[in-house]
Image (cartoon, rainbow, N blue to C red):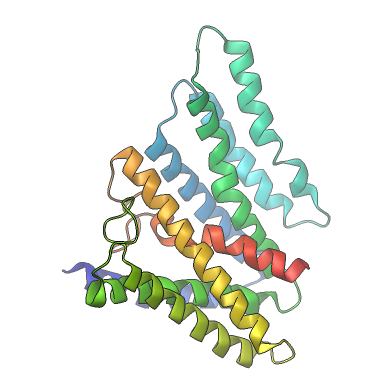
Amino acid sequence: MTIHMKRVITALIGIPLLIGVIYLAPPWVFTILILFVALVGLNEFYSMMRPKGAEVILFLNYPLTIALFFSLLGKGPLYISIFPLFVLFPLASFIFSYPKHRAKMGDIGQIIMGPFYICLPLAFLAIIARLPQGQLWVFFILAVTFAGDISSFYSGRLLGGHKLTQISPGKTWEGALGGLTANLVSAGILGYLFFPSLSIISIMVLGIVIGICGQVGDLAESMLKRISNIKDSGKILPGHGGILDRIDSLLFAIPVLYIYLSY
């Protein structure tokens, strides 16, 4: 079976399930789904980067992630108090184990980076889902980002000829422009349908900014995989690879929407 067919089958199964969770299930179900994505993504990140001498801290970051998302089910900004623990525990561990386990700064940075790279944006998505019209905004960010990803992939394969960066040889300027076009068009259509009270210009600008940040997120994950000398972050999604391979664009795009809705 070709990669294209695997992608299509995965999409045909996954998209209806995702829409059902967003629109039909209680809000807590979506939060639990995002928690699952965060745990798998965090595990893929640590499997890629392989920080040394930190098994206990890596283990602690998983229950901390669970506590983070369960805190979002309650009232108040309790989740804010959990994020400093992702920094405090690794540093405290290395302090008390020094010099027996003399970690490099890169190892410490990778341990701390994981939750802020993966869990923080996904926590923002769970928060967005609980806002007024939150379900529509979740659908908006997913549709705009995935439309850009799909268009970038196929535009690059059909028209690509000019490399975008050395980080990912498969990325081309033609693919990037095709992705941004899809971001712009999908944002304009969904903004007109879902949010008629908002300026269509502001929605389209939002779509472009989401698209640019999404492509940077895609390249960032490509850089991590290149450093780790691997092709995919995992194998959980046939045709796509791992969870991080599917949500890399979202991780950089979600904070943009969060800021837009906040201000």
